[in-house]
Image (tube, helix red, strand yellow):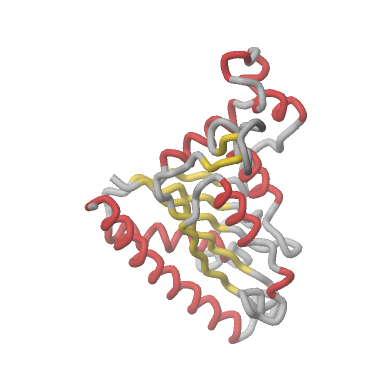
Length: 229
């Protein structure tokens, strides 16, 4: 059975297709999941709303605990890593991660960055050995997971090759650390022109929604083929 980890990180409650000033990214992730379930109703969905309930940011105690071998950890270290362990377990159990990640000041929301920092874990999602020749780090996730980042932006031209793509640190901010831990199958779609609130906004919404439908079909075919192999 396929398992999807559905993450929302927008500070806005509600969806833009249901509520005035609602979130575009919540709209897109919900549509991704709804489209998927319409075709694969037996899929298990794990939902994590980091926008409403942000993970705790990493601290000095967190780092100390994470880099202490598990058998040597004291009780306070296990406590410091408890939330991170839960987030890592959710990630490891999923076949597909679909994340709503709006652009805030050219990057991801702080609450999404906190999620990323909690799941990039030495000994759990990446390995480290300073005595190893060459690169001392290696990814520990090897089961062909896919990540879909569904974003929204107030301005336009942030896609690769666009007029201001050099100012976009959203997709790269998510894709790079996930690639580092072994999640290299990466996809995305985004709504632009949000601050313009005109026909261009509506056109961009329609294009992003169409892309979501395409991604669902593409990933269903991909994961069906992987399981049949």
